[in-house]
Amino acid sequence: MKFRVERDALADAVAWTAKSLPNRPPVPVLAGVLLAVGDGRLTVSGFDYEVSSQVQVDVQPDEEGTVLVSGRLLAEITRALPAKPVDVATEGSRVEITCGSARFTLPTMPVEDYPALPAMPRSAGRIDAALFATAVAQVAIAAGRDETLPMITGVKFELERNTLTLLATDRYRAAMRELEWQPDEADTSLSALVPARTLSETARALGPLGGTVGIALSAPGAGEGMIGFAGGERRTTSRLLEGDNYPPLRSIFPAEFTSHARVPAAALAEVVKRVALVAERNNPVRLSFSSDGLVVEAGATEDARASEALECEYNGEPMTTAFNPQYLLDGLAQLGRPIAKLTFVDPMKPAVVSGSTEDNDDDTSYRYLIMPVRFANQ
Image 1: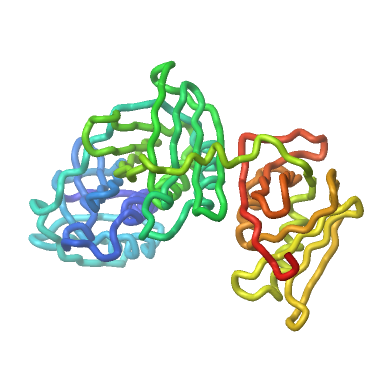
Image 2: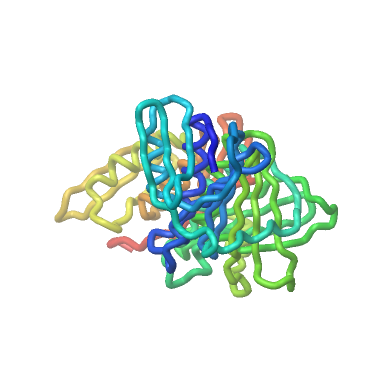
């Protein structure tokens, strides 16, 4: 194998593929990336039996072939190369990388031991790449990180006709985003539970490419569940999580509320950050709403304390509630609108945060639910 390729194109391709490689592979070859040259293109692939990644790059080929090398090491090397064309060639059991006066020689791994990448499932439809990336970021923040409860580490996909709904929860908060997509079949009705980490990395990588992202999903009863995403010259597949007992998140979002507040999202975030400086780990910040505005407080009588007031529009009986500050900040950061609308049923029941504008143009396509925290005076 021998070819020349632009440095940035090679570095991006290897970095994209190496992200999905396991930190502790069960077998050594799964730490590698597969470089295959054919038909004037370089295909860079990675697979760990759970997630596969593949990207194609235009190259100037001198000799076709396939080689397997350490993915993380190759990613570090290509990222550090000077901005010049890169020559890659195999020499026996080693591969040589030359860029300007820089030269690296890497050992190869047995290609015959590398597993075949899974085929893409059946195409289900397409969605705008930038919109998809935004929606995934909004929802994935609420997914759990406790690997002992794998079900809540996923993002639920619900595909009904031309509406795609993303849902996630870690039991203390939940997020839901509804958006339009282009199904291949008008009567599409599918659901899947996708690992949040894989989904987030995929969406971040495909979003900036523009255009659309193809979504492929294995049909129910077609064996092991799998989802695939394709955008530009990149594609990835992932095994699905078992989601038969996933909580019915739609039902926990209140249909009615007794009070609501409208606060500038950026201003509220800054106040929460400042006040939370005196809150010990896992201690909440308290929000007191009245017709006079909002007061944010943290700390106890015998400890450091902080409070700050800011203007807000509030409708309802005066009330005080409390939240984990980081959970609240996570939701505020994803609204995409200048005004945060907080709706309440009761101080000790979940609150819902959504985006709005100064002209009261509410956006309910994204809703972030957060559980209140009990504090000393309750």
